[in-house]
Image: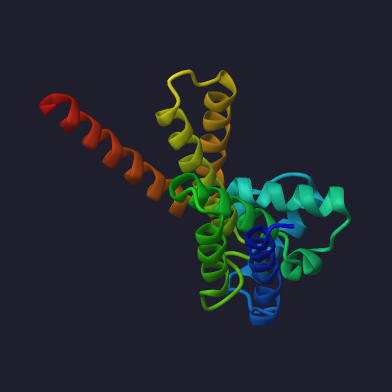
Length: 194
């Protein structure tokens, strides 16, 4: 195996292991309350009027995970369910712009070990799922912008992921809306003057 590939794989493996040690069960204070709502929805089969919130997609996703995977809400609370998807999507996102496997792996390692709790990148959390969707949307936009012959699959993924983001993380949807507004404004200025 090439030494550079071995180094990249080693860094990504370390990126999977170190957060589990650093954030060993360290979750945000709101997570247990959210887990109760997920448990309640999985028992009742619907979102009651007391549970209406700005993140219904998160509650539904959590309920589906508990029912399909057989997780209890405690398992869902501390199982590092977001870690591998977050690492993969963030690595892909950085690689799309840098075209360097080594730089992408290093930045991914730095990203997953920073923070106060593991909620955002490791454990089940609405804004963590939102970050995964956000980075996927930015990656898809870069593919759509760079490729003149885009496929309908990218456009369909953009619509599905974008509409999912609305119901899972209001923070990241707002960030994505600001990003799209800024990109649209820059394209408008470039189109008018160049």
